[in-house]
Length: 377
Image 1: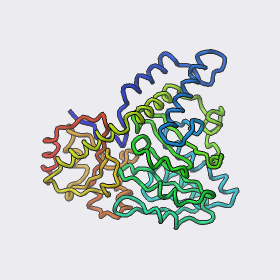
Image 2: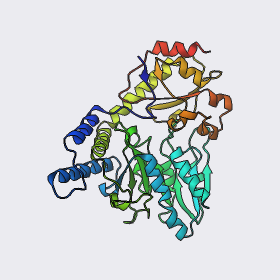
Image 3: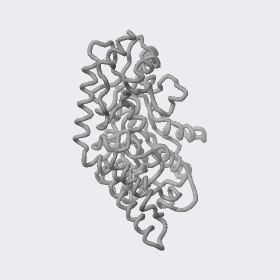
Image 4: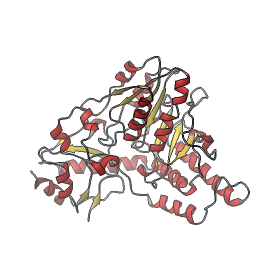
């Protein structure tokens, strides 16, 4: 039986979450915008409770700071593109980001660049992490946005978003964090009050696909001056129009609640799996991509010298489902721009695979796993 080891692409849905989603799909199916009957009232209350649960997972966040979206990709687009008009009106033309962001950040920023905004892209070291001081040094008088991911989706390396936030002045540019891979799994850094905007995705924390949120933290009682990029309906404070998907929102709320309740035990389970994985790899020739001390416990990027990643994935078919990069580019595979930015040589990049798991992951047949890799050497 093939064991799923691609949780950075998407996670399985937690059974309790699936139950909540089913309940609000089949029984309490009211529209939260309907004010004239009890079905709408109950739906609105369910959304309010879910909003509180999503907020509670990050210290210092209020439920009113949470704007529901279809996922982190939409949240990233709102956070970046929603600031452009304000920036232009105020003579601000400069954005800072990194060379290892998800495409959901890189492409909106590239769009802004095509409209005349200037972009500084900071590359990481071989550790997989960027240098926080490089961000500080890149700030200009006209910088209006800094966008740095929380955890890299390919390597699992945690970025120094707290150090970046600590070095920022209270006034001036806004700090956006794509926390799709870190929300619910690495909480401490997101608590930094200088982080203005946080993007999250439900399907990375055991909720269904199609739901996420943009968290807009207030600073001195004011939020980032975002403008909508979609129009029609006025929901979510006019920033994200459309009928609220109550069942998905409730599923996200439940998933966030379970992340908070089971945070330590899940991390312990993921760390134990990681330790077993490295024990199984003993005797095999491999290289770890990124500094292990900076990684979340549930993901790893490995290169096996002389073994093409496509061949390795084919050999492991029937044993483990893994990937060789981000799911957003897997349909037309190109060499990892993340690993390139880390300065790794081409042969190491071409032999790289990503293995990612969660607290619900079953252990594969480790003997078969080991020997499948060994058969290619």
